[in-house]
Image (cartoon, rainbow, N blue to C red):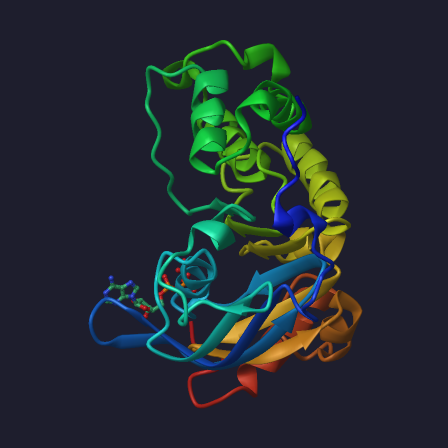
Length: 269
Ligand SMILES: Nc1ncnc2c1ncn2[C@@H]1O[C@H](COP(=O)(O)OP(=O)(O)OP(=O)(O)O)[C@@H](O)[C@H]1O
């Protein structure tokens, strides 16, 4: 007998934004307020999260993944306030997350590991084999699916990380530095995948590679010192720069220009 669809599948979308932060503050460690008063609304699309080292990008992504709780302000995912619910299972089912460093069992095969992650995400049991196959195909690892994780190169492990993040067809997909370790051909393929994913999900991708943002993102979120200093299209960010600003491309010059005017420490390395 076909199981009844669950209520969430049938419910019309009742929220305006997949992600909405209002005066959000999140601590990293005990003291540091690494996200310090963020207002941000994001819907479907591929949103590139840029900012200097220590800007708070990882902390923001961890809070969006419900790994860190807000210290103050409000964070809504799919219209539901994260602070108001102790049980994040319903939210996590709809989130995909690739942390900067992700843990895995070395003796698992690629398929076993992604199956395990699908199970943790509560993908219905009957749907898991097809979901896993589709995820490994999307990251170009179908021919490695039965190899053990410990036999993979660093770039391949990163691609497994991307596969586990998308296996549950998330509505919010959070990728923290996903292109680290990918070779140039894989980065090009990954950019296409990002564009594809942004048509069906709200994708937030943190990166230091401004070219990835230019090539794959519908908008740019520029973060500095725990605060949003720019949100707009890559073209709008490029237009903020001039030939006087440091950088190898118009987007890098725009990035430098916005950071240099964004506060006392804005342009500091
Ligand atoms: N566990 C922790 N304890 C104390 N401070 C922390 C902790 N984790 C991060 N921080 C601090 O919080 C700030 C934000 O860190 P975060 O890792 O979010 O930045 P980031 O933008 O992701 O940096 P990067 O680009 O270098 O990865 C930094 O000043 C960092 O030193």
